[in-house]
Length: 351
Image (cartoon, rainbow, N blue to C red; front, side, top):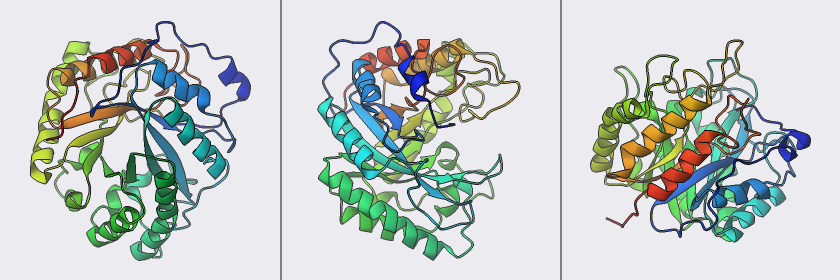
């Protein structure tokens, strides 16, 4: 997602009517939304967005902060102004979420300041060695875990979509242990959707799930084949194979699954490539495809959630509205579909 929203644009945004007035009481299920703290102003107030989530029926929020490094070969991990909030803003946002009655999760994600179009955090190759990279990563997420404990955060995601670094099991176990020494809540790692059944020749699946409390998964599974929108029923059927892979993973590792990211940009082709919200000369806004994709996702899970404790919708941050082709659901028909999904999502009992 591109960041750096203007104050005028956000203030001028108007919510769609129909928000829930009395949000559902939280139980063990995760009915959540991710809120990326991605404004270019490190002091930005996310309070209005937090309150919008609660009004839509969310019981949980995943606060996402970017840890920047120069490129995929670097190890200079840091919170960089312009790409991350300052500590006061992060603390304020966590407290705003708690005050709104939301359960709070916190997830750092690695942001590449310089990259080619095809490069992303799943392709890191530290030039000065993985041991140096992980040492610096622990130097960032450790204090973040301490802050999370102090602010009453319930769930902490120790890493997300770092596919090329997942084979370094010992480093991850050391990282998880370092975080657990500072944070007593639920620990999660979020792997990319294509890693639960790796292609031939790819690194093996994550080997450190036993050190964590939940399996996290960014669930950008393709649910369509072309640019045109499939029906919600077709997308519900398309979830059958991914659901089978998710259940097999949960049985194998003996952990519940949380879908840390589920999202569809409001553009043609979203069902075919739901991970793709990049710019392009031929991008066409398609609000209907986003709405239908959300309906298909919800229909695929609400009858029987299986091992899936719940999900976080990606991502609320953004101006939104009828001309926006990005992920945000703000001011779009998909927001109403998400609200319905929250209302339909069943409870969760510890198993």
